Image 1 (tube, rainbow, N blue to C red):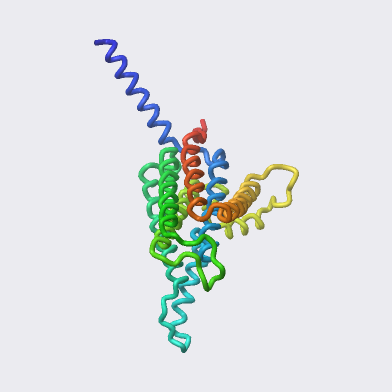
Image 2 (cartoon, one colour):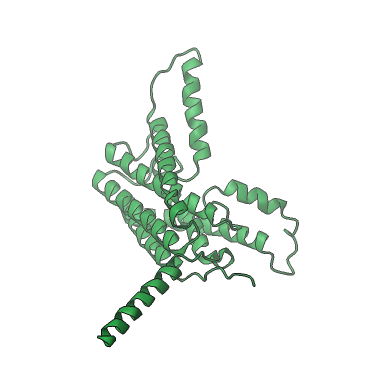
Length: 266
């Protein structure tokens, strides 16, 4: 009887330790690798979307302005009431981006910097990317557009793909922002460029400067993601490229579980 109680006590201690480990906040200063991977995925996913329809899944500034221009056409004297395909795609991306960002509110309950949420949230991004890959595969659409006037994606399933890709980027953006590091949102790098150029230590190349170097790493990762995303797109198509992205995101979700925790200062 005593032996059984000891086993139950050990199991309880193990579960308690595991729960404590999972819900410990990560040290943002030691999370450069997975956050760089986030920036990489921004470029990677956007390469697929922009190459097909000239719409960014992650950069919603352009989509918002595009919808403003679409509304302005109603008052230009020609009364163009056509809801253009490009505007439909931009609206789809914006709405699903917001919905994906809303999912990040789950992190408020679990701890937005906890290993458990960062791993779970990235796993959700993985599932969204997988769903996008399946949707565009089943759509039978091409991968690269000839011109803006002739987008490669036009049918319903392609809109499903746009939606899942944009939702994954919305979720990633909020998760990146909540870690409160020099990588900011990992999505909108216009701000990162501005902060980099405004950094007082920008030209101090004789020593490491976290505020500068992490921003350079974020920008470089984004560029690399876009480059490799387009290279894969030409080789294996949209569905295959998104399949690779699914695998990469799954690796990042596991990666979060091994980021060192934040130490309490004595």
